[in-house]
Structure formats: C-alpha cells, structure tokens
Image 1: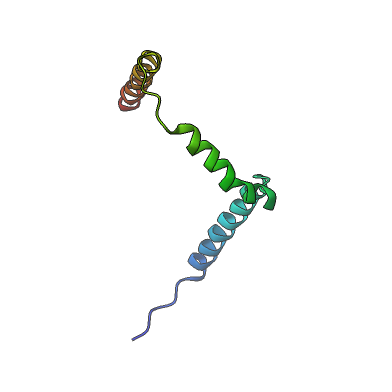
Image 2 (image 1 turned 90 degrees about the vertical axis):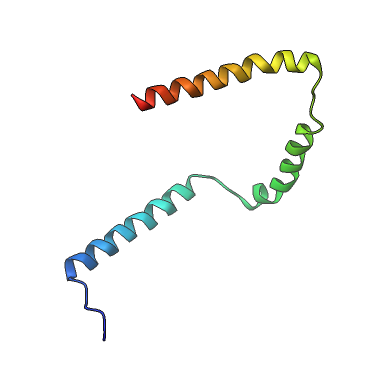
Length: 86
C-alpha cells in the first residue's frame, strides 16, 4: 500500500514556502556580521560576564538599591499582562 501523490499545486506551495523560509533565514543570518574572531572570543567574554555576576553582592546598600528596581520591573510585567489580557 503506497501513499497517494500530493496534487501539483500543494507540492509547489510547499516548496515555495520552504524556499522563502530558507532564503529569509540566510538573509537574516547574513546581517549578523558574525566572524570567526567573534566566535573564538565568545568563551572569554562569557567567562568575564559570569565572573562579574559572582559572588553576589548582598550588602544592605545593594539590597536598598535593587529592591525598588525589582518592584518596578514586576509592576511593568503586571501592567503588560493586564494590557495584553484586555
């Protein structure tokens, strides 16, 4: 028992959509300006970023600075959720 062939129009549509997605992906990737040098420097930059995040600064001064910003972020997220729900 074999599968029936797709109609020609469906095959053309499928291949056209696939080609558009591939062309769009290549076009998007070409605008990223990624070079081998950037790829090779990425682990070093990630290590610097992670090293800057630890150890955490949990001093009272840092907490006083951070809490209002966290509250503001939560309020913005809540407001966005309400706007999106309406």
